Length: 160
Image (cartoon, rainbow, N blue to C red; front, side, top):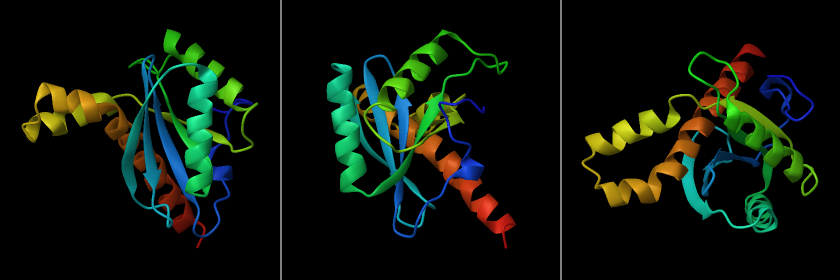
């Protein structure tokens, strides 16, 4: 996934106490999740209703500042066969534009099946359609971020 837009997770430097924000970028909303300060557990945080890019970027930067964020992990919407679909261009454009608003790195993370997995959990919990709609984006962001955190933990284990 190496492009000049994204930092590889293997190259991420996170200092003690810093967090990582996970993003599930949709056309109408951005699901946001936050790691703990040990970068082990992802917690769904909020769903941003998308307005103009400047508004969305401002909110993400506010969260990054408030929680001492080291990086963003953003879901990369690959097709099921691993090829790049049309939504990839929107994700790349968003990250390019954010690059002008923040110095924090972006890590791309395969988001295939994240919404499906979260939907299944919510259905098993008997969540109503309305309650699923309210939380699905931030929970998908949590699912994406947790995958990246698990990889980060694995890499840290390899370093010892």
